Length: 380
Image 1 (cartoon, rainbow, N blue to C red):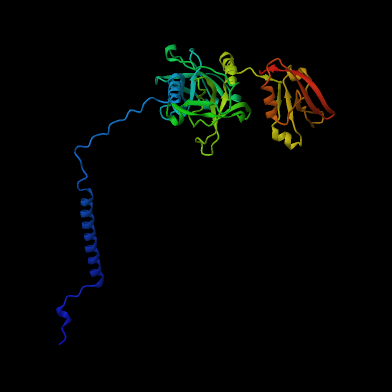
Image 2 (image 1 turned 180 degrees about the vertical axis):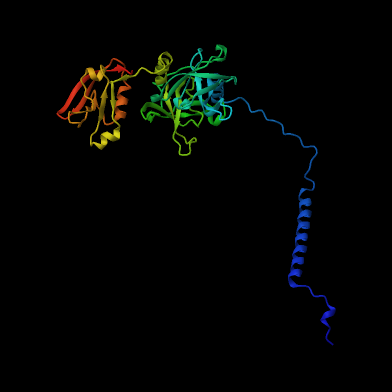
């Protein structure tokens, strides 16, 4: 006889499946729990103690030398914070706002601090933090942007000032060990090591003029290292870290330093005059792209300083004739036999001369080329 289905409970198929899944999940958890207990059972040891420290022995000689160098020079390295001053809209008070950081070093016991020009460029004030963490307000003495140099001054006690030892960059060799001390990314008193990768490099300053004889190094130089010292193994200053080549802005193995011989020649002038006394021709020149647009090659004279060196040599400026037409001035194409194709060539040649030196210019005029002797004058 057939049974009446009304006497049997009927469960939906989905509900039955869900209950089976829950049961299986609980069983898996229980299995994992018991396995875990089995895994750790007997692993704890209440007698565990720190391992005995094995003496390392003496440091290697090169490690000792590097440590000694850092201890010797780091008191000479400073941390620089450039500051802008803004007016509070509500209280009208002047607010000092940090805009950037960099490094520098103590030049002498009078409180003069040397750094890169681009570290303090566009700043309205600066703070200098010495190695003992004391902070001092700095005054801007002067700068030479063409070589990315600037000099600050602080009124600190001579007891706190440790002038850096100055070396020379004239006898450096590729492969020579170098050391950089600075404040990358705000971390003060950081040491990196490397070698001289190249000499006689040329980079562009913030004024777009060439800096010659630059030292290339693979010692890690990062943002914040700018203005800090590059040292030889004797702890002597051989350059100022000034630039890196990096698409990301961080260390990529190529750094540059302005050679110390340039620094040692220009810093005393900045301290004495507030600027560098540079030899010049007494002219203003046209932009290179304008000269190229004319289909010419050389340096075009735009104006001549009255009674200046070029004026006394009868060099011609660019001018207008009686009809208002533009008459191009003299085009400098060579100095002392060295070809001048653009303004960089002119600046490069002048950098190798002193005020009062006589140079022979070859200039192009509509009627032909002539040679003119010019006695270099001081920059006004």
